[in-house]
Amino acid sequence: MMNCKIEFYQQQYAVEVYKFFEDFQDYLVNLDPLKRLKRIPGFGEKVLEKTVKEVAQKQGVFYVALVGDKVVGFVVGVLEGQSDEGLLNAHPGIMGRVTELYVDDSFRGQGIGTKLMSKVEQYLKRKDCDYIWVEVFLPNVKTHDLYKKLGYQDRDIDMIKKL
Ligand SMILES: CC(C)(COP(=O)(O)OP(=O)(O)OC[C@H]1O[C@@H](n2cnc3c(N)ncnc32)[C@H](O)[C@@H]1OP(=O)(O)O)[C@@H](O)C(=O)NCCC(=O)NCCS
Image 1 (cartoon, rainbow, N blue to C red):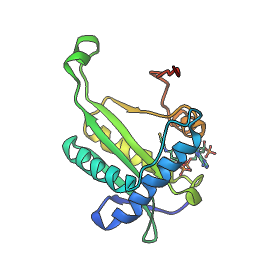
Image 2 (spheres, helix red, strand yellow):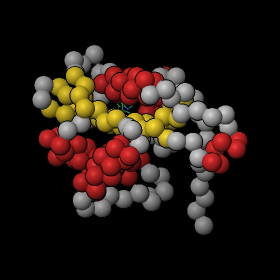
Image 3 (cartoon, rainbow, N blue to C red):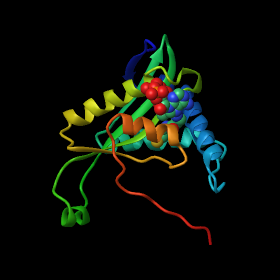
């Protein structure tokens, strides 16, 4: 188990974190059997900006994992209000969503992802969420397995057919 500390994201980590958003997108592009995904120039900066805004709007949390003073991963969780449509077909509740999780390739498999998930879960629990949702790209089998190991179960399956 790698000794890392978890802190709130701050502007000083921006360059390291947006590079990770780009590595993350490259990782997904590589996994995509349909070759639909791509990474545009400036992707990391744009996604980081959008993420920081969303965290502020949705009472979210953005944690980074640090080994020494190097950022090695991050996680983002937000609160989702229940839509009017949701209230028609489900019991009322506060829903949490993990929107991002990433650990630097060379630091994987040492418990950092699990630690980040546990921190974000504690946060969402403190905010009175009754469930946590997380989406996973089906070809991302290792991550799907990790979520199952952490107690998540499959809920929706999004299907696709090429025309
Ligand atoms: C998913 C991810 C955050 C896990 O981080 P991590 O620090 O390796 O996680 P942990 O060490 O706590 O747990 C490792 C477990 O994750 C899984 N895993 C997923 N990808 C892995 C990888 N590349 N290397 C090692 N383990 C990986 C394994 O099932 C492993 O289980 P094990 O410990 O029983 O062998 C990391 O692999 C990652 O950033 N992947 C790419 C981005 C991604 O898929 N993000 C989630 C999007 S939904």
